[in-house]
Amino acid sequence: MCMPVAFLVLALTLFAFPVKALDCQRLLHLGSPYTVCEVDPATADLRLFHSDERGLLGHYSRVNQKLAAEGRALSFAMNGGMYHQDRTPVGLYVEDGQEIAPLLTGRSEGNFGLLPNGVFCIRPSRADVIETRHFAATRPNCRFATQSGPMLVINGALHPRFIDGGSSRHIRNGVGTSADGRRVVFAISDARVNFHDFATLFRDTLGLPNALFLDGKISRVFIPSQDRRDIGFPVGPMIGLTVPLGSLKK
Image (cartoon, rainbow, N blue to C red):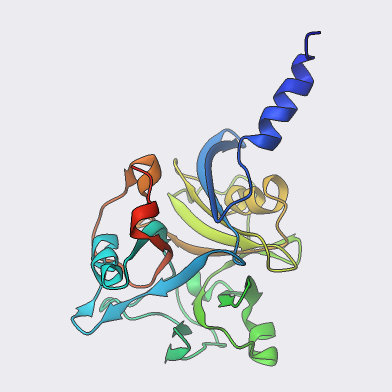
């Protein structure tokens, strides 16, 4: 008996990406292409990276050099928040439980200052995007955290300053999380997009109630299983998923 085409398409959609620590795919949203990677924080070794004893890491290759001593390597990474000219983080930055830079709750410049902004917080078995004022009031115990801005989606609502059809278009990257902290989805646009369209990717296509802009223009991603290794100038904070060295797909 022939399977109906509609059912076959649905089956392929449901089973093309089985549950595992990392799932990456390409998709279209409002006519623009994106690369989207979903991470399960309950099974993933998700971390933030900035410096080591030699100084700024800056590149994914330097992170891999650092991880080699542990017998681990990156299976995914992207730039993880804004930074000053000297590559130090703008706003809160926590690495392996140590606060490197403090939370900023007041007004500031640039996209970071387009309030409300937020914090990406990694805790055991969960990760969350949390609006900054709520973060300041609750002070969750994050093993890793990076503050950036603006928020893209806040409890299911788009940032109030975003304009449908806005003319400011750039390559952009960000992260969204589910209400229970069990879905973490990273996205980078593969074409220039505005804030409004980028935010609706997280809310409408990915179904996530909270999402945070990480950066634009300098945005890049590292996915060796897809032979994608974006290059550019050194960056500040980086978010990375590590795996045992021998488990990386060629």
